[in-house]
Length: 461
Image: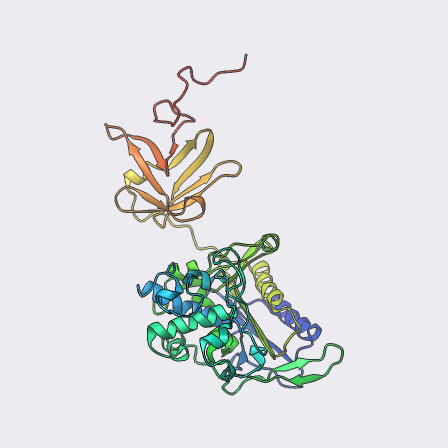
């Protein structure tokens, strides 16, 4: 992993360093380490420490807490892509006898299965996993708190179930499957279930005094798949590149895009805040920018991974205190600093390699009723439909190879766009999910539903 800081301008580097220095001081944390990724490469690394003359580098491990959930979600998505399971399957189909089996796998991934947030009994993050040796010990007597699918209710126990699902279907421990299917292919050699030197120690900082208390680092046992992992800024930078672009050795670009797509119903407060949840990934809108990733915390540690796919930027921030700096805010700020100081240079415009006359004929202006739309043929072989004025529904469309096209996003996702031709072969109109698009507003020569008044357009006398 390159950590050359020459890639960013000196002013940008100073702004990044200033941001983490303020976070470390105001958050009163023993150490804080961060990295920024641009265009698939680490372009900056910075650290601040309370120890004179020493600061952690990109190879020092910190505990990353719930960022572990994203790794577990990737393992589940791999099972889906292999056809071993369907996200709509109830858990009971593959892991019977849990008392929450009616929740689907997708609902567990999105925290909408209605499962309780925490395990009953003593605080599971500060007690050994041996106290909860079986799933029944993790779930307790009342594991379901809400109807499945109705509410986003963050659940550590739900991701414990997903880890058990991986073990059941792979026939191997979660940690072993993780190492074989994600860590080794992506080269994440400094990510592990247990700390490996060099690693930071976890601390609690007294809320009313500049004093420290060491935190225990417990093995979470059955709940490992919800928060066990230790990692570094170097490894998480690589993981961020994977979550933005995919890697065929692990998961395709289409599948990681699915993980980054909202999958949970948002509460009113979340709508106001611009936050939602995908499949093992948190999503938020800040400064007009969509950010995806995950945060994490365990006693003694805070972690954050923030990605702006549109800017091809990511930030990793790790620290070793139980509470203090808001790492989600720091991560978003690091992305914003680079995006604003050194905006992404767009790829050069390039023309189509080949022009299909039948496809080119579709391009141009179309009307749905009186609403004007433009249809473009783009260099990537897609059609792009967008309103010409005001708001309206738009989408890109992918060719099905038979003259029809399928919508890729928003309202028209999955809907069929079908060019309709007259008996003489000339283009009549477009049928998009039963909506008729014509070359003229309410073209009388096209089969507009409801018909067109034969007297045509008129003024108001």
